[in-house]
Image (tube, rainbow, N blue to C red; front, side, top):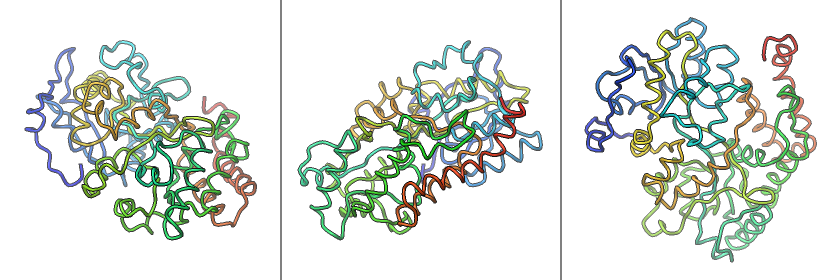
Length: 417
C-alpha cells in the first residue's frame, strides 16, 4: 500500500482479526519472510500470538533466499514469486504440500483459479499455496474507441487490428492506438501463451520459439509497430503513463490489477467514465494471459511444518483474503472472494475475474527469467528492424538452448526428475 500507514484498528473495525489457535498450532514458533507492501499487513491480519516476522525488499529477496538456502537458514514459511517456485523446487528447498491440502478444510483447490494454482505444481507435486494473483489485460479509452466506430473491445486479433487501424486514423500522426513498452516482456508473453504450441519443447529441454505459433505471435506484435499503431519506446520514455492515457496519447494499454487504483486516483473526474478494462483477445477468440502473483511455501528442512501450514490456512481464509485485498489492492486467488466481496460489483475488476479463468502458467524451469530477458531483447531487435521475424526466432531458440544446456545435462544424468 503505497505510502499508507497501516494499523491494527483497521482490521479490528473490519472484524477480520483471527486468532491462530486450535490443532496445537504454535504460530509464535514460526519464522515468516515476506516481501513488499503486502508484507506490511501480515502482522495486522492475525490476533494473539505472532510469527517471527521479517520483511524483505523485492530487489534483494531472490538473492537473500538463495543465500539462506545455501546456509541452511531458510525460514519455516516464506512468500515466493510464482516464477521462482521451480528454481527452489530444483534445489530441493520446498516441502510438497499435497498431503496438507488433502487434509485441509480451509484450502480448497477447486476455489482457486486453475492457471494460478498450476504455477505451484512442478512435476506433478504441489509446492505452494497462491496468496495473491496477477494477470495482464486491457485498459482502454472507450470514448476514443467509440469515436473510432466501435462499441465494444475486441475478442480476436483481427478485430483488434481493425480497431488499432481505425483509432490511428482518428487520432492522427502524433498519437497512437496502443502503448507496448519495449522493455516490458509481459504483453508479448501474454500473446505467446495464447498459442497451442508450448514455448519450450521435449520436456522443457529446448526452446520452441521457431514454432509457427510463436512466429505468428511475434509477426503480429512487430506489425503493430510497423503500422505506426504503437510507438517504439520504453516505459522510461513515457513520463507519466496515467497522464498520457488521460491525454489520449494511446487508447489501449496492457497492464495489471494495481492500475485500477492508479487510474481511479490519477485521472480527473471528467475521464472516470471514459476508461474501462477488458480481457485480452486471442488469435481466434477470447485469449489467455499470464498467471502471476505470489504464493506461500514451506521450507523442506523446517522443523515446524505443521505450525507453518496452520499459518498458511489462516492467511488463506476467504475473509482474511478479502481484507488483505481491501488494504493492499492485491487481488485474491480464490473465486469465492471475488464472488462475495466488493470485487463482485466493481466494474473495473470484472474483466480481471474473467481473465483469471484464462490465466496460463509459463514453463516451469529455473531458467525462465533469463529466457524472458532474451525474449524481450530479441523482440526489441525485431521491432527495430535489425532482425526479421524468422531470424529473430531462430536466434532466440539458439540463445535459449544455451541457457538450458545445464538443465539437459542434469536431466540426462537423472539429477532432475
